[in-house]
Each structure stands twice: as structure tokens, then as C-alpha cells.
Amino acid sequence: MSADDDDITEELLADAAKLTGLSLELLGLDPHPDDMTAEQRLQFDSEDLAEMAAVTPGERTKAVSQTRLLAGLLWNSSGILIGQLFRDLGTLSNLEAVTPSDIAGTSVLSSLPPQFAAGYDAKFTQKFIAVAADVTASLVRGWTAPGCLAAELAVRCLLDQAELTEDIYELDLPEDWRARVEDVLLDGADSEALYEDADGGSPAGHVNDGMLDFEHWFTPFTPGDAVPPYACS
Image 1 (cartoon, rainbow, N blue to C red):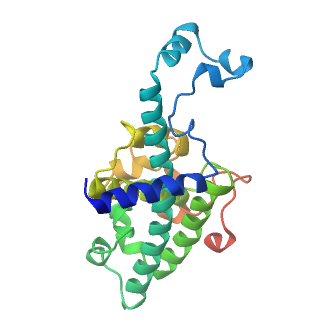
Image 2 (cartoon, rainbow, N blue to C red; image 1 turned 120 degrees about the horizontal axis):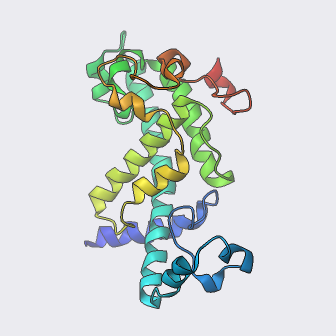
């Protein structure tokens, strides 16, 4: 690990405290039985509690450090995501017409389902920025499930950015961290079907096929789901 790698690790560990909307436990850190209340211990069977208690102090310290690093990475990546979306918006605003090849050269929009690339124009990007900013704000105010398909896609773009940073700096993160985080942030999400169907047809057999249509990406899943007003316009 280079000096620069050391610098970003320390920066991300410091940023971890800013991610107040998700606890380390939600990010995959197993609590120690001694740190639980009696009521919390009732949620686990005796074998799980014994396994948690058997973790050595060294292993526990490493697990805490890795999970804090993940928390800081998500915070850091959320800022990068919004900055790059504004950069993509600037690029598209200078084009008379948007083509799939234009989208392929963008920083964030290129991570969206490619079969809809022709629709990722400046207006779409403005609405997507509003949704992405709301999603990243949930990392601070308290996590709430995405209220529309575009919000689910913004979460996936956020995790893509986190993976990119992880690869560049070879960060020491928890094993299978992305799968764990997706289980929390995208529980029951429909948007994965759009990536399984890159040819542009309707995902076969999917319960909510209609809601996967491009025209519904900013439509709230239910009347109680919050979507930024600008994105609904």
C-alpha cells in the first residue's frame, strides 16, 4: 500500500462518523453479546451467540475497522456520485441530440441499463440528480427504502462508484460487502431485472413489469413513498 493509499484510508475512516443514517451493524458488523441488551440477545440462538462471543479481540478490531472503512467509503462515494452526475449533465447539455454512444462515455449514466440510453437526456439527468441527492441524504438522516425505480438505480450507481474506489486503492473491506449492503439498501428491489434484460424487452414473468417501463422510473411505488417533487414533474 502506497502513502496515498494510507492517506485515503485515514480519510475514509474519519468520514465514517458522518454516515449517521446507517449503523455499523446494518453494514454487516456482528455485535458482541456483551454489548447487547438481554432483549437483543433473545433475537439470536445460543449457537450464534457462542460464535459471536468466540471472536478474538484482534478479529473484532479488524472487523470494526473494515466496517468503518466501508461506512466512510459510502459517504465519500455519495459526494463523488453527485459531482460526476453534474459533469454528465454538463456534457449532455452541449449536445443537440443524445445517442447511446454519448451515454457510454459518461461517468454515471453509463452505469444505467443501456437499453434505455437514448432517453438519458439533460432533462432526465436533472431529475436523476434530484433523486440521487435524496438517496445520498438518507445516508445521514436515516435510511429509508427507495421510493421509485430511479432511486433504486441511484443506489446501484452509488455502489458502482464505491467498488471503483475500492479497486483503485485496494481497500481492505469486509468480504462480500456489496451483497450485504444491497440486502439492506435494496431489499426487494425490482431494478435488477432491468440489467438482466439488456436487449430492451419486458423482463419475462416479472410481477411489476409495468413499473419497470422507462416512463415510470420516477413514479412513486406507492402513494406513501417520497420522491422529490422536481423528479415527479
